[in-house]
Length: 107
Image 1 (cartoon, rainbow, N blue to C red):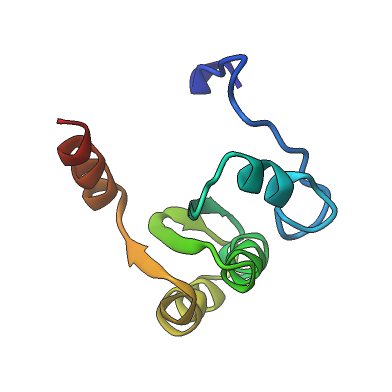
Image 2: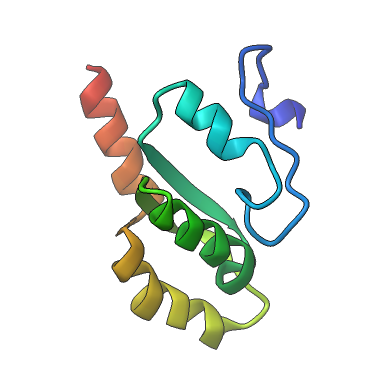
């Protein structure tokens, strides 16, 4: 998407399953770059985001879940993932808190 201002050096992965790691090059490319943490947002919280978070956790990544940058067609399922599942897999945060942290680290 042009709005994301993609650059030639950006990592691009084609997602073909519920989770971003399954049957993709994502894990290999992150390992190659020495990445140890992933920040997750997305559509369909309890399926795509949760599957990706579970796999990232199992692969040993530090997982940050930006809960106000996720959505689902089922509010109850979304809430269950955010309150019951995600705290076991990583750290929940908000967009504002994440941006504040990133700004402080780059200052």
